[in-house]
Length: 268
Length: 215
Image (cartoon, rainbow over all chains, first blue to last red):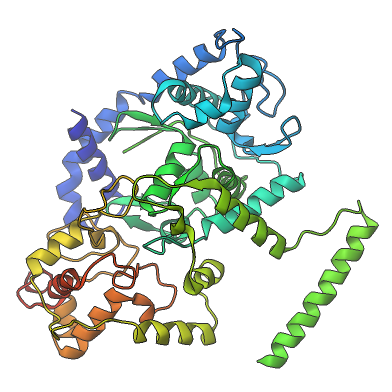
């Protein structure tokens, strides 16, 4: 089942670039893929769990996350996702959604942030993060990106992110820019957004977190960036590290005003 | 050229002075320059990664080419471009036995494989060439990328001459030889592929019997 859905997804990706010769060969796959999509995005399951987790008293302090400030005031979730990363006065840091959640989990619930950061994706508290980011992003679905840039630290992280995006290194001389610096390119059959400008940046950045059909998992933005760096043959980016936040700042600001968030999306 | 640079430098100095004055008149905060952000970015890169599996943090170390290509992208100035291309061509290691053509069937396998050198790969695993990720190569394989140009019928168009063989060899060994700051990896220079593997890929592209040219 999983394999056939995957094949259908690959086939559907092909449609966007299909030559007439390919169109016939992929038509069946596309029909199957549409059928699969019509059944609904499984990310909904993570969204429901995320909303429960937000309101559940947990951790050593047996507290909920309902006083967590995601930038719109304590407890305000609607619209928060499309303004992140942003600067927070209490931590004096620019934070993305996930590093901000770590702060809230530690301060409100007493769950140590560094332990969550060290937990592998898809395990323990990281599973809870996946559910939380699914729900929180869904609460901004259809809204345009609108990251603030007034604070000097926000501007600084954007500038660092831009440089990190263009940083070429490793065994293959790859950087983010290698695959995401031009219009209309693809890797194998997978189309690649040009993340250096809107509205492609909004389409790319605004899809994550996403449900991945190929693995049956909900991937957060941190996990998406982590796997990009793996494929670049770069070393392992530390969870919530400044390079990951700076990249999100660059992508988010580039997406500003040019498109709406559809996260959590469904991906091959 | 020199005069233009000097004029540019004067203009920049004037701008910097104006910016500094504006900074004094305003909040009094120091003006942050692009060079400051460069330094901040370098510090963030150095602090944000750790080793995992076979991948150590020295992967972040950049040579002169990587530094320039990160900064200027594909729009290098002519002096740098010519210098990088000449240096790349000079360091190409030609086949030890003078043979450029291997087995196209092996070449096809290498072109298909995207394995190797990530933190989830084993140290002793054979590296792939990742060729189909970016290039159309055979007619049969429809799952190809478009970051690089189509190589379908490459040998038919360019001929299986020694000149073409040498060009393809060098292009795979160090593609900066012909196009500085290309997106293509330096397969020979960085030891991603060995001499034998490169020979097989040259065969895939140029052998008249290869499906690249025969189909």
